[in-house]
Image: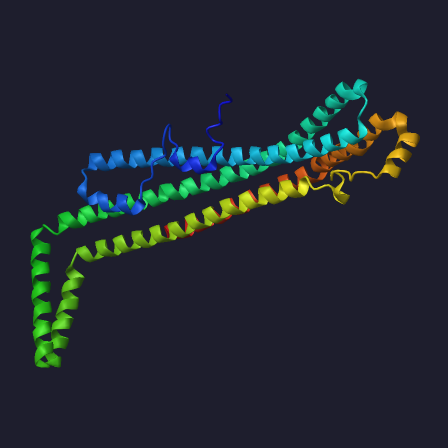
Amino acid sequence: MEKKNQFEDSNNFDQMSGGEVQTLNFEEVKSMLHTLTPEEIEDMFSTLQTIREEKKRVKKAKFLVEGRNLICKKVKEVRDKIEDQTKIHAQKKERAQEINEERNNVLEKFEASLQEIQKQYQERFEEILKQRSILENQEQGTLISEYKIKQERKELKKTPKCVELLKQEKELKKQIKVALAKGDLELVEQKNNELKDLKKENPLIPLEQEIKAVQNRRHRIKQLLKECDQEILNCEIDRIDRIDEATELKDNKLKTLKKKNIFQKIAGILLNKRDKGNQYQGNVIKDVEERVEYINKKSIPQVIQSTEAEVKAFEQKMAEKRKRNIR
């Protein structure tokens, strides 16, 4: 029994990592930080990095296999059409081996041309994953930064100065509430001003601002990750469209020939009895060879030019947005 390719079923990709690709919710990681020791946090981020690398490897393999499957489908379609015409044009047994060699040779060239297109999109796909990995590392960096700032804030809260300031702040807020209940607006304004002055002395305020800035930076990184995911989808769609366009013969040359009526068959036998094998080669092999030449001379250069431009533009866009996000 033939062994099934482990990557053949795209539905299995989210379950692979050796045996399984684990999933780790980013919000769960964030909530766990304050319950772990520094050593445990280091281990957790190391595990997270390993999981991300494994998922990236699986995505690369999935994209590659999906491309191969698409090419195999196109080659099979051409093979089937060739074989349909073989039944009509190549009936002489002495030509069977020669015809098989011609067919296999042209199909190998056809497949090789499509593989070159796949190669270009594979490189584009992997570049997008590379940009995504940079963002994921930055996202992880914001978590670490937020954790460290919060730890600093936690320790600062224990200092006598902060304890006293927080106590005074609590008392002022209580006094403001009482003044509001009595309708004493003058006292409310006085206590509010005292509260503002007190907060200016509070060393926790700058830390709160830093935490907010880090959280905002992480939010912007998440938006960039969504852009990467959209770019991955665009790459997948472009590959299918380009291979479809490259394999679509003008005038539908590879469409299966219609069956001839009895009069056409008789005329064909009388006029072309000796040329059936040559008809096969002229009608089919030539058409496929012309398509291979078209792919090699037109489609592939276009793909190389477009993918290089797409990769360069996307890389520059991500670099600029990451740069702005650091500010």
